[in-house]
Image (cartoon, rainbow, N blue to C red):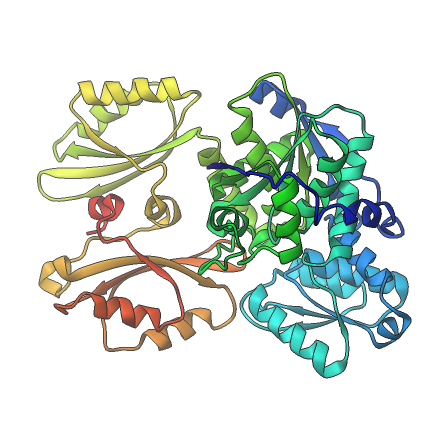
Length: 516
């Protein structure tokens, strides 16, 4: 999804950042990162693609720029008392590294779901860590409380002019490169790096567009643009934890309305594909948020040719356990792997006849589930070279009178069905037509599953349950519940009290074909 922004036409809020960026003290802890040409991506996209390599910073992310610029400008009295910050990782490392350099007492509040790699990295800088809450919002409330209680200076991760200015030095470096870029793509969480980079570029180069990129399940900036005011998202996706923010910052939004040309939303699968692209060109494993800008660049690139495009590769603090999920979904994000549910007659030779349809196509997955005495369903993963070759395969299936459904974008298929074994519900056992299916996610922490089940209670029968941790701060669940109530809203209200947000999928065809 692409949304153009009607810029205000003035720099009322942005003008002050020219001086702030010029005077920013970042290079005591940060480096002027290189801009790398990406030959593999360029070849695929028919444009010249470059990466601004913030993944090469000493803390493997751009966050040390803004954090240091904020902290170094504190008063002596504030420095003597120390600072506190809340972060799921990269901002925490930026604050901790700044405090170590300046010899300031540092307290970091991190969600209990924070990956161990980021906790260890912060500890290496000598910061004291408090684990509190399941997400950033809960951690920041605790940090603000400690700030008041202990008289510590609170260092905001994005909504602060000095922090914005520190991140804005990236925009200054991009223009100093003299590469004549047409568009700069910037990742968006709370908007700190977007505000800083766009403030500098918009006021120093009229020919370069600045485009923000958000994950579609945490698009707080997009919603703010639509409403022309800051809004708070009811739910925030956790996969790209570095940009999992419910509300864009006030200072950030003021600047963005004046300086940003467009915002693009991308899927988790497209982010995973961008992680793969960065690895193939740089041999660096980017974190999901770090590859976000490139994912947006690729969406934009489909509509243009022979342009010079640059994406900020913003961080490489990836949790290694998450890599299996990224690998699984990167092919989907690249639109190379297709998932089909194919109905076949339950007679001898059906498998053979179906397999002949695929000829020399590369099969990535083949799952079979008997439906009844007459029919069976096969879940097939196919790696395709082009959309044309996939359409040819579908025509062959139709000609042979195979009924099929494309599950490539089906959430139940991708997150659960491909990893499940088991059977269908049985009417005689009291399930069958009374079963309702919901998918959701909750923070991955010790006792999370037990806590959910205790909140759910024992008055309703669970007929199906699939729990899948993604090697990150959250797990995805698929739950089947027997519902005998005439009032179907009662179960929804009961689930709302469990503390987990669910989406009903009872009518999802993947469920109906393979599990119902």
